[in-house]
Image 1 (cartoon, helix red, strand yellow):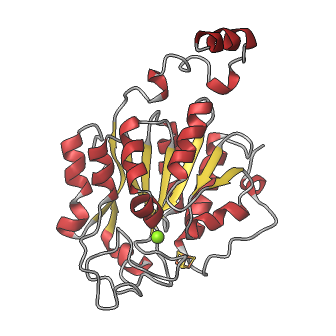
Image 2: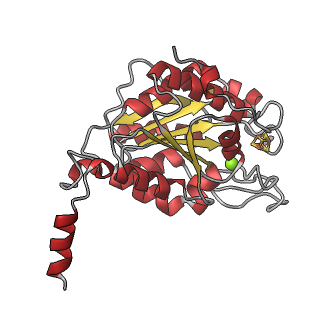
Length: 286
Ligand code: SF4
Ligand code: MG
């Protein structure tokens, strides 16, 4: 029977003690066990950043892309074999800075990919610079007097760009986060899960202590099928200081792969390469 130890390698993560990435890694393995997805049954594409350190300690089919580029790679894998479960994993800088353009277009294309964003509101791997989600006034090596930029809201960006599943989790609540990963995976379409991840070394504003006072789980009575209501929920943090966790929005619509006639029934990777047809095709252009 599948268990979390099945995902272990001989390497341990080298995150700082107390880093929120430990919680995300634990929640991910818990979710995979619950889903019955073994190390050879799904593909994980990482970007560059502290989150990518998971790659070394995670026995799975892994690919580490360039900074900000996990989504193009994940989309390519999905196009080649859309029956294969595909996860993409990024940090906030990776997803919304270097990869911001890819993020918008993956949302609107609605590839069936589960996207986990380790959102610690700072560039941690490069030793602490302001990122697209850093709060205004955030002091870092790149803005010693405090950032004058307004932060980007990953949830409202995902909603407006057309993502069909939008949720927020917290690295400090592993069972709840694991449950959100399961839901994000089970959704057919592009699932964005923004995960609040304390960076104990470089983010002294949003810490375990502050989150303990500000986060709450979205009420059971909330039905995530209304985009206007989802925008309202997704802007609550900036309007009230309260930080809702859970599923903000879910919509069933065709995925990108559903709408490509040539692959929608048989994935490209499983189609036979008929040389006769290839020759006929080439002859047409001769
Ligand atoms: Fe985690 Fe921050 Fe350390 Fe990176 S720098 S490993 S995000 S605590
Ligand atoms: Mg970061």
